[in-house]
Image 1 (cartoon, rainbow, N blue to C red):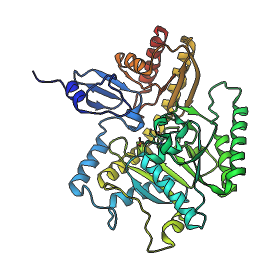
Image 2: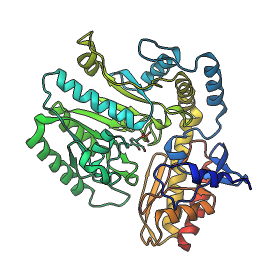
Image 3: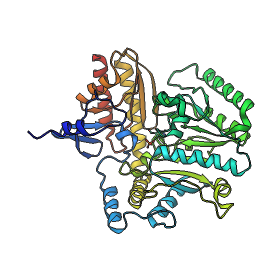
Image 4: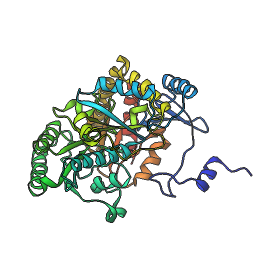
Length: 429
Ligand SMILES: Cc1ncc(COP(=O)(O)O)c(C=O)c1O
């Protein structure tokens, strides 16, 4: 008898962040905020397919751009060659970024965008005659990908403990996570700043850079911090000339309500890492964006020197074409209005939960992200995922935290309905 797709999958495929007990669902097609399984059952994609899909599934504008580009030029080695889609994309991004950002280095995913920034930061100090700056700073709970560099700076994310003996040394700072009605936020921030100060006092001349997710840590549970705290951290680091790397892999392209999370801050990093929403969720592509100060010292000060990093698919033209289309859609008034409408729907929905459920706390909303914690959790996250899926909702709780991070094309009324549905599910837990 012919095996089902799930049976064939189970015998062949090793899935990410999954164990053999996890259920697998075959998805056949996607349209807007919805995904459909083999029997055409509809699910609302409330996590934008791991935070990448900003304009919805099956977006025709992006799909057509991809088709046209594939016919014209599918790929060319990016060392010694270039192409219009890469140039046009960087030009377009430059227009929505602060003026200092002038140099764009391509790679394929969020983790490698971070790796590149770490290598550039260290190379900068080495070329400046300070090769002893081998330390990086990061926050407890920060997640920056699964490569060895990403795991090292994300050492306190809890995701990679098995590999701790392979990781390079990182100094960590407590993260002052906050939520609506939190009256301890100031003392948490003071504590974090005093740990930062002591690292700076004891190791200031050995630190190359800090890496942080501005305004919200994603993978550690959609943990929000205040803009004024990040401003203060960056100010202290820049006073000591320490480089600052913003990991906007998740927060870029409107996720926090503005173009980038840094648009809500009064400080600017030396490196900006972007990925996920860059191609609207169609193809893997990422960028490490920096300025002339870094570029001039790392590369152009020595015409014979080349920054030692690159991938076979660096700046793939089809991915660049998808990103150009996605950027145009992102800048449209329709998307900008959607960001506001989704934020309003989150406020409405979280209020519904607060009014109807006794088992939630620590609610928080940032831009297009809504999150809360379940207080009486007797279910594993895998069980919760299953319960939600049964109700047609694709959600991936992070520990006790449930978050909703939809594509921007979602109908705000659908989102409100989802919250109502969630309140029934939570009450029945
Ligand atoms: C903030 C942040 N940085 C880096 C990464 C790694 O990105 P990727 O999964 O594309 O390697 C992620 C992934 O979730 C992320 O959320």
